[in-house]
Length: 454
Image (cartoon, rainbow, N blue to C red; front, side, top):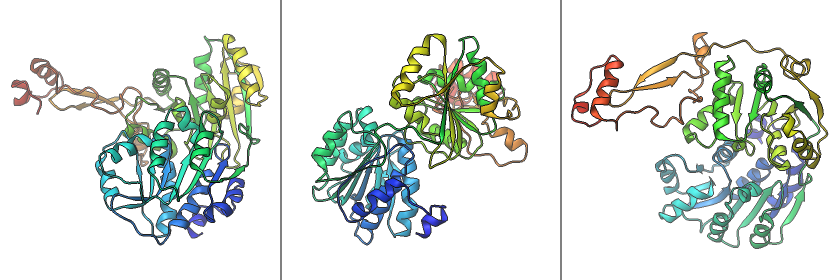
């Protein structure tokens, strides 16, 4: 209770009120609630309470939380860790895209609560580095999203490794795409709690459709992103997300990107920059539509309308969370008008629809006064291994640092491809490396003369 109160959590949400009596009693539970409804605490509290006082064994987990994405794994871990620590329990998180050694070390001592993505967990089990035979409580979070991503076969294999006698909880926004099969196969006479319809708009969220011409759309996007509060812009492809983040930054609106082409380190740095306010604009693909919780996102913009209504609701659900208000804008070019009308109708939304051009009062009414223009940071040439050059744009926090403020860890903007060896010349021919070194004003290394990178 002290841990919750320190976080300002004083009243339970409906999904928590509904499920806690059954989950604390050890019953299997099926909980359905929209995104942002408080499901993470609904399963974290009973899991920690039930595991308290047990014994850890090497390479074994006592509580298992399966989640579909790395970002959600980190956010669940952020909720679970302080609760587990207060109860004298250990917790760790496991996912791909990063080195496995720290994860292996944490598992080697045994762990009370393991939060994991299916792919990396299966890999560690295959190497004999993790064992699920001691799991007492199993939780499937965002089960419908795991189904959408094709993870259900891996989830079934993992659940087959856990004891049948353990407690199991499944939380999901919907029960389609095979989720009901998981319920029937792995949950024992579950108590079902549904606090929302399968798809439910949020009453504190306002929805708008801005009809724009293709020629006006880029300028309208810039104006929507120029406000003083946090905004999240969704696009359909990784390429267009990267391109828009670069264009906004060049226009004096520092933006970071979030999509599958970034390394895990880059994804975490960019999300951290958006969370701590170093950058107010996040440009993302649907990777950010589920499991991402950032406080006080004032505006969600569907720069590219999603392909189906559930995606619209999940994207939009990044704002107006936990009872707060929020605004959602969908941009529709003339050829997208009918598609957007069908989308909002299926989502149960009645948006305000207007035709806008750059400078329209409807835009200013939603964004408020624009934030100050930020000059793009100059590219800093960083010598790369082997004497070459690597262009590393300064982070959006550079301007804050110049003003005497403390900048967050450097986010990776477009122009720095995932932070993985960008611009390295260690594998280039020796003469090429020598020429690059000369242009950088450096003497070529001896290694370059032997055709090897130092």
